Amino acid sequence: MSPEALFSTEVALGIDLGGTHVRAALVDARGAIVSCAKKRVEDRAPAAVVEVIGAAASEAQQGAAQAKVVACGVGAAGQLRGDTGVVAVAPNLGWRDVPLGSMLAKALGRPVRVVNDLSAAAWGEKCVGAARGERDVYTVFVGSGVGSAVIANGQLVLGASGVAGELGHTKWVPDGRLCGCGERGCLEAYAGGHNLIAQMREAIAAGESPKLSALGGGDLSRLTAQVLEEAAVTGDPGARRIYEQAVSLLCLAIANQVTVLNPARLILGGGVLRHSPKTFDRLVEGIGRFASATSRQGLKISPAALGDDSGLIGAALLARGGLLGSG
Ligand SMILES: [Zn+2]
Image 1 (tube, rainbow, N blue to C red):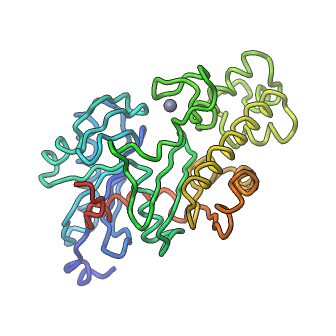
Image 2: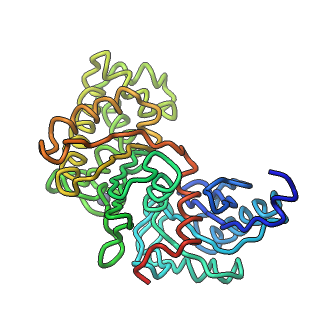
Image 3: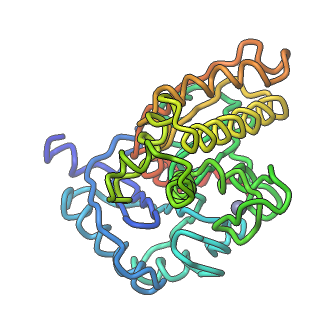
Protein backbone atom coordinates (compact mmCIF):
# COMPACT_ATOMS: atom_id res chain seq x y z
CA MET A 1 0.00 0.00 0.00
CA SER A 2 1.38 3.43 -0.94
CA PRO A 3 1.94 6.13 1.73
CA GLU A 4 -0.68 8.26 -0.05
CA ALA A 5 -3.28 5.50 0.33
CA LEU A 6 -2.37 4.99 3.98
CA PHE A 7 -2.80 8.68 4.68
CA SER A 8 -6.51 8.42 4.10
CA THR A 9 -6.94 4.86 5.44
CA GLU A 10 -9.20 4.42 8.43
CA VAL A 11 -8.32 1.19 10.19
CA ALA A 12 -9.44 -0.81 13.21
CA LEU A 13 -6.97 -2.26 15.69
CA GLY A 14 -7.54 -6.00 16.09
CA ILE A 15 -5.90 -7.93 18.92
CA ASP A 16 -5.65 -11.69 19.33
CA LEU A 17 -4.95 -12.70 22.93
CA GLY A 18 -3.87 -16.32 23.36
CA GLY A 19 -2.24 -18.14 26.25
CA THR A 20 1.34 -17.58 25.08
CA HIS A 21 1.28 -14.72 22.56
CA VAL A 22 -0.43 -11.44 21.77
CA ARG A 23 -0.85 -10.31 18.17
CA ALA A 24 -2.02 -6.86 17.14
CA ALA A 25 -2.93 -5.70 13.62
CA LEU A 26 -4.29 -2.67 11.87
CA VAL A 27 -7.09 -3.89 9.59
CA ASP A 28 -8.73 -1.82 6.88
CA ALA A 29 -12.46 -1.75 6.07
CA ARG A 30 -12.08 -4.57 3.52
CA GLY A 31 -10.53 -6.86 6.15
CA ALA A 32 -6.95 -6.54 4.86
CA ILE A 33 -4.10 -6.42 7.39
CA VAL A 34 -2.14 -3.19 6.93
CA SER A 35 0.40 -3.75 9.72
CA CYS A 36 0.96 -6.46 12.32
CA ALA A 37 3.03 -7.14 15.47
CA LYS A 38 3.48 -10.14 17.80
CA LYS A 39 4.68 -10.24 21.42
CA ARG A 40 5.26 -13.11 23.81
CA VAL A 41 3.29 -13.28 27.07
CA GLU A 42 5.87 -13.99 29.80
CA ASP A 43 3.84 -12.91 32.84
CA ARG A 44 0.15 -13.88 32.78
CA ALA A 45 -0.95 -11.38 35.46
CA PRO A 46 -3.69 -9.16 33.92
CA ALA A 47 -1.75 -5.90 34.34
CA ALA A 48 1.34 -7.43 32.70
CA VAL A 49 -0.73 -8.82 29.80
CA VAL A 50 -2.37 -5.41 29.26
CA GLU A 51 1.13 -3.92 29.07
CA VAL A 52 2.16 -6.47 26.43
CA ILE A 53 -1.01 -5.74 24.43
CA GLY A 54 -0.19 -2.02 24.59
CA ALA A 55 3.34 -2.70 23.31
CA ALA A 56 2.04 -4.88 20.43
CA ALA A 57 -0.55 -2.22 19.53
CA SER A 58 2.12 0.51 19.48
CA GLU A 59 4.37 -1.57 17.26
CA ALA A 60 1.51 -2.28 14.83
CA GLN A 61 0.67 1.43 14.74
CA GLN A 62 4.30 2.33 14.04
CA GLY A 63 4.15 0.02 11.03
CA ALA A 64 1.48 2.25 9.46
CA ALA A 65 1.88 5.54 11.28
CA GLN A 66 -0.37 7.52 8.95
CA ALA A 67 -3.35 5.18 9.18
CA LYS A 68 -6.09 6.46 11.47
CA VAL A 69 -7.35 4.01 14.10
CA VAL A 70 -11.14 4.35 14.49
CA ALA A 71 -11.99 1.29 16.63
CA CYS A 72 -10.38 -1.47 18.68
CA GLY A 73 -11.44 -5.07 19.24
CA VAL A 74 -9.88 -7.97 21.16
CA GLY A 75 -10.49 -11.67 20.64
CA ALA A 76 -9.65 -13.34 23.96
CA ALA A 77 -9.27 -17.08 24.57
CA GLY A 78 -11.77 -17.54 27.36
CA GLN A 79 -15.38 -17.33 28.45
CA LEU A 80 -16.72 -13.76 28.59
CA ARG A 81 -19.49 -12.09 30.55
CA GLY A 82 -21.64 -11.04 27.62
CA ASP A 83 -20.53 -7.82 25.97
CA THR A 84 -19.24 -6.27 29.24
CA GLY A 85 -15.53 -6.71 28.48
CA VAL A 86 -15.10 -8.96 31.53
CA VAL A 87 -13.27 -12.27 31.01
CA ALA A 88 -15.05 -14.70 33.35
CA VAL A 89 -12.71 -17.68 32.89
CA ALA A 90 -9.53 -17.96 30.81
CA PRO A 91 -7.83 -21.27 31.70
CA ASN A 92 -4.77 -20.64 29.49
CA LEU A 93 -4.07 -17.39 31.33
CA GLY A 94 -5.26 -18.56 34.75
CA TRP A 95 -7.76 -15.66 34.84
CA ARG A 96 -11.07 -15.35 36.68
CA ASP A 97 -13.28 -12.27 36.33
CA VAL A 98 -10.74 -9.93 34.76
CA PRO A 99 -12.19 -6.58 33.49
CA LEU A 100 -10.02 -6.69 30.38
CA GLY A 101 -12.15 -4.21 28.38
CA SER A 102 -11.93 -1.38 30.90
CA MET A 103 -8.23 -2.05 31.65
CA LEU A 104 -7.40 -1.91 27.95
CA ALA A 105 -9.58 1.15 27.32
CA LYS A 106 -7.52 2.96 29.96
CA ALA A 107 -4.21 1.74 28.52
CA LEU A 108 -5.05 2.43 24.88
CA GLY A 109 -7.10 5.58 25.42
CA ARG A 110 -10.12 4.38 23.43
CA PRO A 111 -13.14 2.09 23.86
CA VAL A 112 -12.27 -1.57 23.36
CA ARG A 113 -14.69 -4.34 22.43
CA VAL A 114 -13.79 -7.75 23.87
CA VAL A 115 -15.12 -10.88 22.19
CA ASN A 116 -14.35 -14.58 22.50
CA ASP A 117 -11.43 -15.59 20.25
CA LEU A 118 -13.54 -18.14 18.39
CA SER A 119 -16.30 -15.60 17.76
CA ALA A 120 -13.68 -13.26 16.34
CA ALA A 121 -12.19 -16.00 14.16
CA ALA A 122 -15.63 -17.06 12.88
CA TRP A 123 -16.49 -13.46 12.05
CA GLY A 124 -13.20 -13.06 10.16
CA GLU A 125 -13.93 -16.21 8.13
CA LYS A 126 -17.48 -15.00 7.44
CA CYS A 127 -16.39 -11.53 6.30
CA VAL A 128 -13.31 -12.32 4.20
CA GLY A 129 -12.53 -16.05 4.52
CA ALA A 130 -14.02 -19.46 3.80
CA ALA A 131 -17.58 -18.50 4.83
CA ARG A 132 -17.77 -15.28 2.88
CA GLY A 133 -21.33 -14.50 1.84
CA GLU A 134 -22.91 -17.21 4.04
CA ARG A 135 -25.57 -16.37 6.65
CA ASP A 136 -25.62 -19.62 8.63
CA VAL A 137 -22.15 -20.76 9.61
CA TYR A 138 -20.80 -23.10 12.27
CA THR A 139 -17.07 -22.84 13.02
CA VAL A 140 -15.02 -25.34 15.03
CA PHE A 141 -11.35 -24.84 15.88
CA VAL A 142 -9.29 -27.68 17.32
CA GLY A 143 -6.03 -26.27 18.63
CA SER A 144 -4.63 -26.32 22.16
CA GLY A 145 -8.32 -26.28 23.16
CA VAL A 146 -11.58 -26.96 21.30
CA GLY A 147 -13.86 -24.03 20.54
CA SER A 148 -16.76 -23.19 18.29
CA ALA A 149 -18.84 -20.23 17.23
CA VAL A 150 -22.32 -19.93 15.75
CA ILE A 151 -23.39 -17.40 13.14
CA ALA A 152 -27.14 -17.61 12.50
CA ASN A 153 -29.01 -15.46 10.01
CA GLY A 154 -25.88 -13.33 9.56
CA GLN A 155 -25.41 -12.58 13.29
CA LEU A 156 -23.03 -13.99 15.88
CA VAL A 157 -24.95 -15.94 18.51
CA LEU A 158 -23.58 -14.98 21.93
CA GLY A 159 -26.22 -16.50 24.20
CA ALA A 160 -27.90 -15.02 27.28
CA SER A 161 -24.66 -14.62 29.22
CA GLY A 162 -22.25 -14.55 26.29
CA VAL A 163 -20.87 -18.09 26.38
CA ALA A 164 -22.79 -19.75 23.53
CA GLY A 165 -20.75 -22.08 21.33
CA GLU A 166 -18.47 -23.59 24.01
CA LEU A 167 -18.36 -26.96 22.29
CA GLY A 168 -15.10 -27.85 24.07
CA HIS A 169 -16.90 -27.88 27.41
CA THR A 170 -19.83 -30.09 26.45
CA LYS A 171 -19.69 -33.27 28.55
CA TRP A 172 -18.98 -36.66 27.00
CA VAL A 173 -17.73 -38.81 29.88
CA PRO A 174 -19.58 -38.46 33.20
CA ASP A 175 -16.97 -37.74 35.94
CA GLY A 176 -14.25 -38.17 33.29
CA ARG A 177 -10.90 -36.42 32.79
CA LEU A 178 -10.40 -33.07 34.50
CA CYS A 179 -10.61 -30.16 32.03
CA GLY A 180 -8.80 -26.81 32.21
CA CYS A 181 -12.17 -25.18 32.94
CA GLY A 182 -12.30 -27.03 36.29
CA GLU A 183 -15.08 -29.43 35.25
CA ARG A 184 -14.83 -33.10 34.30
CA GLY A 185 -15.52 -35.10 31.15
CA CYS A 186 -15.39 -32.19 28.67
CA LEU A 187 -14.69 -32.79 24.96
CA GLU A 188 -11.59 -30.58 25.30
CA ALA A 189 -10.19 -32.84 28.03
CA TYR A 190 -10.01 -35.66 25.42
CA ALA A 191 -9.50 -33.86 22.10
CA GLY A 192 -7.79 -30.50 22.77
CA GLY A 193 -4.09 -30.32 21.84
CA HIS A 194 -2.85 -29.75 25.41
CA ASN A 195 -4.84 -32.71 26.64
CA LEU A 196 -3.75 -34.96 23.76
CA ILE A 197 -0.17 -34.34 24.84
CA ALA A 198 -1.04 -34.98 28.51
CA GLN A 199 -2.65 -38.31 27.52
CA MET A 200 0.40 -39.24 25.43
CA ARG A 201 2.66 -38.65 28.45
CA GLU A 202 0.38 -40.80 30.59
CA ALA A 203 0.43 -43.61 28.00
CA ILE A 204 4.25 -43.52 27.91
CA ALA A 205 4.45 -43.56 31.72
CA ALA A 206 2.06 -46.56 31.81
CA GLY A 207 4.23 -48.46 29.29
CA GLU A 208 1.26 -48.57 26.90
CA SER A 209 2.94 -46.83 24.02
CA PRO A 210 6.33 -48.07 22.73
CA LYS A 211 6.06 -46.04 19.51
CA LEU A 212 5.39 -42.76 21.33
CA SER A 213 8.27 -43.49 23.70
CA ALA A 214 10.56 -44.01 20.70
CA LEU A 215 9.25 -40.98 18.76
CA GLY A 216 9.60 -38.80 21.84
CA GLY A 217 13.17 -40.12 22.17
CA GLY A 218 13.21 -39.14 25.83
CA ASP A 219 12.32 -35.57 24.96
CA LEU A 220 8.62 -35.22 25.82
CA SER A 221 8.49 -31.73 24.25
CA ARG A 222 8.60 -33.49 20.87
CA LEU A 223 5.13 -34.94 21.44
CA THR A 224 2.54 -33.21 19.22
CA ALA A 225 -0.85 -34.05 17.76
CA GLN A 226 0.93 -34.87 14.49
CA VAL A 227 3.21 -37.36 16.28
CA LEU A 228 0.09 -38.91 17.85
CA GLU A 229 -1.57 -39.33 14.46
CA GLU A 230 1.57 -40.93 12.97
CA ALA A 231 1.94 -43.35 15.90
CA ALA A 232 -1.76 -44.26 15.78
CA VAL A 233 -1.54 -45.10 12.06
CA THR A 234 1.31 -47.56 12.78
CA GLY A 235 -0.91 -49.39 15.29
CA ASP A 236 0.76 -48.28 18.55
CA PRO A 237 -1.84 -49.31 21.17
CA GLY A 238 -1.66 -46.22 23.41
CA ALA A 239 -1.57 -43.73 20.54
CA ARG A 240 -4.37 -45.54 18.76
CA ARG A 241 -6.63 -45.49 21.84
CA ILE A 242 -6.08 -41.76 22.48
CA TYR A 243 -6.39 -40.77 18.82
CA GLU A 244 -9.47 -42.85 18.05
CA GLN A 245 -11.26 -41.59 21.14
CA ALA A 246 -10.49 -37.96 20.26
CA VAL A 247 -11.62 -38.38 16.64
CA SER A 248 -14.81 -40.26 17.62
CA LEU A 249 -15.81 -37.63 20.17
CA LEU A 250 -15.08 -34.75 17.78
CA CYS A 251 -17.10 -36.42 14.99
CA LEU A 252 -20.10 -36.97 17.27
CA ALA A 253 -19.92 -33.54 18.89
CA ILE A 254 -19.64 -31.62 15.62
CA ALA A 255 -22.20 -33.81 13.81
CA ASN A 256 -24.70 -33.22 16.63
CA GLN A 257 -24.20 -29.46 16.32
CA VAL A 258 -24.80 -29.70 12.58
CA THR A 259 -28.03 -31.55 13.34
CA VAL A 260 -29.09 -28.86 15.84
CA LEU A 261 -27.99 -25.75 13.93
CA ASN A 262 -28.37 -26.80 10.27
CA PRO A 263 -25.56 -24.51 9.00
CA ALA A 264 -25.02 -23.87 5.29
CA ARG A 265 -21.28 -24.02 5.85
CA LEU A 266 -19.12 -25.72 8.46
CA ILE A 267 -15.60 -24.34 8.90
CA LEU A 268 -12.97 -26.57 10.51
CA GLY A 269 -9.75 -24.92 11.64
CA GLY A 270 -7.14 -24.66 14.38
CA GLY A 271 -3.57 -25.90 14.74
CA VAL A 272 -4.35 -29.60 15.30
CA LEU A 273 -6.42 -29.89 12.11
CA ARG A 274 -4.06 -27.72 10.06
CA HIS A 275 -1.14 -30.04 10.83
CA SER A 276 -3.15 -33.29 10.60
CA PRO A 277 -4.82 -33.57 7.18
CA LYS A 278 -5.83 -37.17 7.89
CA THR A 279 -7.71 -36.01 10.99
CA PHE A 280 -9.50 -33.34 8.96
CA ASP A 281 -10.61 -36.03 6.46
CA ARG A 282 -11.74 -38.34 9.28
CA LEU A 283 -13.89 -35.54 10.73
CA VAL A 284 -15.50 -34.79 7.37
CA GLU A 285 -16.28 -38.50 6.95
CA GLY A 286 -17.65 -38.83 10.51
CA ILE A 287 -19.80 -35.71 10.26
CA GLY A 288 -21.21 -37.05 6.99
CA ARG A 289 -22.13 -40.25 8.84
CA PHE A 290 -23.52 -38.91 12.11
CA ALA A 291 -25.25 -35.60 11.27
CA SER A 292 -28.93 -36.09 10.52
CA ALA A 293 -29.59 -36.81 6.85
CA THR A 294 -31.65 -33.66 6.38
CA SER A 295 -29.18 -31.34 8.12
CA ARG A 296 -26.25 -32.52 6.00
CA GLN A 297 -28.04 -32.15 2.67
CA GLY A 298 -26.22 -29.33 0.88
CA LEU A 299 -23.85 -28.81 3.84
CA LYS A 300 -20.53 -27.35 2.68
CA ILE A 301 -17.47 -28.19 4.81
CA SER A 302 -14.30 -26.12 4.38
CA PRO A 303 -10.96 -25.69 6.10
CA ALA A 304 -10.49 -22.25 7.67
CA ALA A 305 -8.96 -19.97 5.03
CA LEU A 306 -7.31 -17.21 7.06
CA GLY A 307 -5.02 -19.31 9.28
CA ASP A 308 -3.88 -17.47 12.38
CA ASP A 309 -5.19 -14.13 11.04
CA SER A 310 -8.91 -14.90 11.30
CA GLY A 311 -9.20 -13.76 14.95
CA LEU A 312 -7.26 -10.54 14.36
CA ILE A 313 -9.34 -9.61 11.33
CA GLY A 314 -12.63 -10.62 12.95
CA ALA A 315 -11.94 -8.70 16.19
CA ALA A 316 -11.10 -5.58 14.19
CA LEU A 317 -14.16 -5.83 11.93
CA LEU A 318 -16.51 -6.56 14.86
CA ALA A 319 -15.21 -3.50 16.73
CA ARG A 320 -15.54 -1.34 13.68
CA GLY A 321 -19.00 -2.47 12.69
CA GLY A 322 -20.52 -2.70 16.17
CA LEU A 323 -22.17 -5.81 14.85
CA LEU A 324 -22.53 -7.73 18.09
CA GLY A 325 -25.94 -6.22 18.61
CA SER A 326 -26.38 -7.26 22.24
CA GLY A 327 -25.20 -3.87 23.58
ZN1 LIG B 1 -14.13 -27.95 30.20
